[in-house]
Length: 174
Image 1 (cartoon, helix red, strand yellow):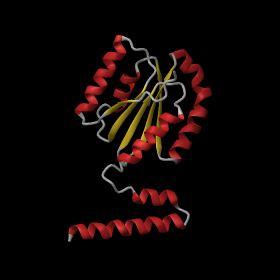
Image 2 (cartoon, one colour):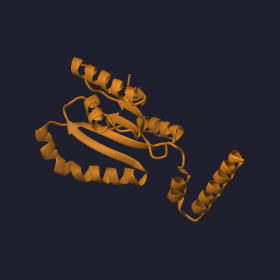
Image 3 (tube, helix red, strand yellow):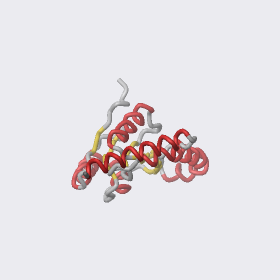
Image 4 (cartoon, rainbow, N blue to C red):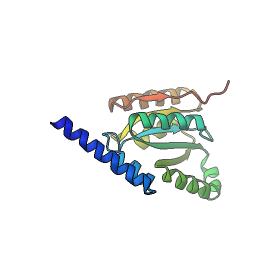
């Protein structure tokens, strides 16, 4: 009987979402259907590339759809402190408009500046959070001993939280 009740509930939710979509509210319909156990969890994309490539975002969005969660981007911008102070006011407007555009699509965007390793930044940002389904790590950072150690530490920390880390190399050019 419980299985039949769940089936009827799913059909009712689908019909309500279809009605909302037909009424011109596709965003509300999409939110209404997000009732899976991962609906409030996120796939975290960590990148230190100057511009995150479309292929990387497409791969991560596809992963989000398969896992049933949302997308969060942690973008490490390589700037020294004096570059940050000078460029912050100039870049603030473009980052704010990018953040607004991404928020409309349900994507959370966190730009961070500094010279440290991306792995350290990702770990500081989300190392103890329980709402991360998976981490997609797309980095061009130097492979020095400090960054290698930081990557190992990050992977171990997320594995302890039962959160897989994917090293994405799809945007590397030959």
